[in-house]
Length: 478
Image (tube, rainbow, N blue to C red; front, side, top):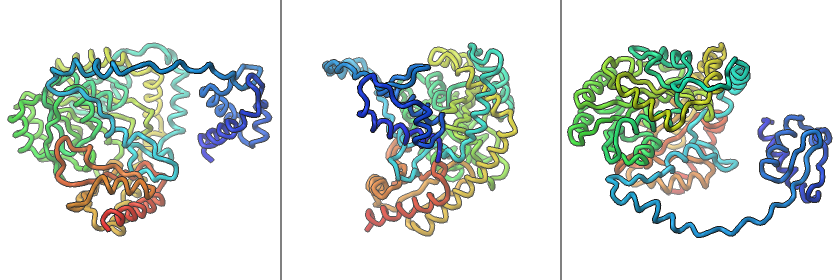
């Protein structure tokens, strides 16, 4: 049994037995709990720590654990209705309301209920994460001299150099800022490049988290359609002319959600169009390290072919490691770099040094390339299993593109099929899927679903999840 599940089960058992003890009474010793429940001392310690965090027990070093004395009743809740006026009054003059809608992001962050197969996850399943390598890296990092001191504001020089080498081309360590995850880097980039009320060009469909960032900053997302070869240059040029936008946000490699890769003949064209418009291209290179085994050589980042400072590049290690391993890079050159640096410092100061040190330990270890190879193989196997199951069980759903990187498939529903009804029916059938609507900044051309194959335990769960989705489909379409 996984350690975390053992901790949760023991904590629940102890929680149920607390009524046997009077407030302030001592609980059985850790040794007694180890013998009684046949778990490790670490599991007992963590279970008691969980109850202590809930305020149910108090632990005293050398004395043991005791049931907590009941807290005094909470004070009655006051009247907070005045906040509705305060939060909205100043926004009356905003060109674009700065509303914060996190629903599109929460779909891939929230854990599903027990027994529900997670086709909506945005991260690797724990079995695919390099947990041992990360733990070893963190342990080694904690012993580095000065590991708990304040790092340089821009990030550790060795880590900036590592990111610069990975990006390539004209990018140097001096042009790299270490940031706390890709979402933070995108937020910094959009705040630096566009004032409130300005238009920002986005791919359509695109990542809902980026749309949420733009709207929260008071920006106006303007969609530019994507096809199997990435963003369409002619429509991008039209959008720049029509809006006067100065920013275009794109994912040239394994785009989310379509999985498209920007075609070689379009790469230079996109940079030329942006340069002619006097605009920046924010390149979200979020999934480069989740390439599938059969992908072949990858194209370089757009930033590697950009001597003029058009591209502001974002790359992250989070998708290839763990949701909590929030280390990424923001790269640029020219005057914009100082603005990016200033905004990051004001917002977050710096990424904690122990995490940066642990990153250096991880990517410098022999475990890192082994992990990437293992994930590459596993993702191809999972992609093929999901594709085969969908073609067998749900031939009515269109799968226009099978990506060679990333962690999901993008399905188009037949005309007239209800995306919301299918999503709800799927959840009732025991499988959580991601609806397509949040990926569009304007009216979508059709209903869609995004299905992740990385967040589940293995191919068996994929097959069962597709079977459950077929049950839901039968209920919706009859």
